[in-house]
Image (cartoon, rainbow, N blue to C red; front, side, top):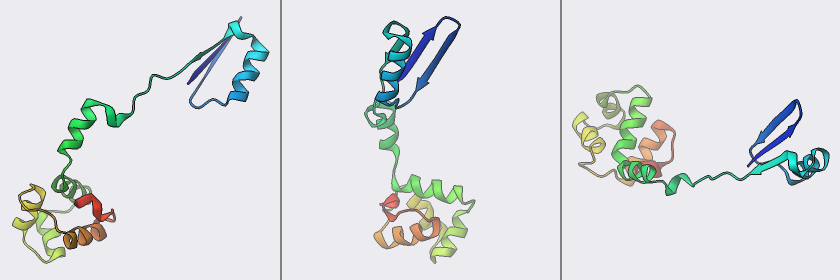
Length: 119
């Protein structure tokens, strides 16, 4: 919501969730002709096409790749921590192999994120 108050030599605006009492006070003080209220034409991001496209690309493997890079780890380093091979990590990141619940739990502990991020 946007509230704009205009008076000669004075203009100010409020953005965000403006309390009703404050709006009523402004209208009372400055008059209804000097206060303009605009409702935001906001759209839920989950309803936007670009978000849906990006969400479709969001796979467990991409999440694993993201968190590994974020932590500055290489595939061999992560493989050593998990007791597996670099090739196995590569297969997980490229969605050639699914991430098991047990592996997701281990990854969640390493990266300190929910296990559901990898399933």
